[in-house]
Length: 114
Length: 112
Image 1 (cartoon, each protein chain N blue to C red):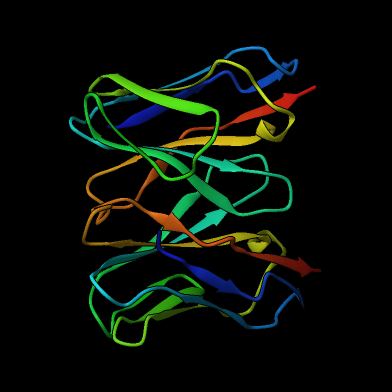
Image 2: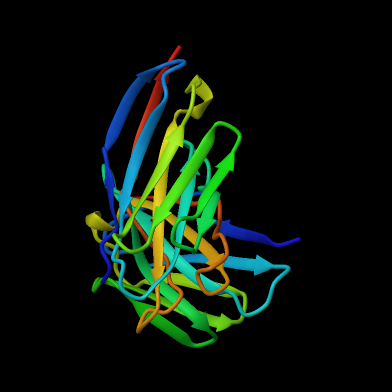
């Protein structure tokens, strides 16, 4: 089974701080890397799906980069706001016996203090 | 538009009792279907996934099972629940892993 690792496990920042998280994944037979935002008592919602090495995607104050050769992705949040507080999940899908299925990391829990 | 329904939202069951959680998807065909679980203090763990009717892959050996009797229906079952089965169960669908996954609202299961 694939291992998707995320760090840090949790993060506490002040409103206005910029922050970033790391996701590492197996680079062999890579297919796609997903980032999700998971608020308490809600379902995870997709932020980005990236497939190409060097991909950079942006949605408002949140952006992500992808390095498929070395197997890592960064998620950046610029000027954190209290409403950014959530658990951020990354997930990887690879070719092979488990083709197409998403394997999630344990997430990074972000708390933004006003 | 596509929607995913998962029920029930909460469930309290005694140890040794059976379990059946149901998930249905509307507005798409031949989706990949997933069951995930988040145990207390842990991340999302993939339990089962299915790429088609009757095709079930299990990622974690346990006393749970899954079935896909129809293209857009995914059922998670157990004959006898354990305390360790408590957690938050999420159903999800996508298309082959390259599109974003869509999640149901989740089921909070407490085994007592």
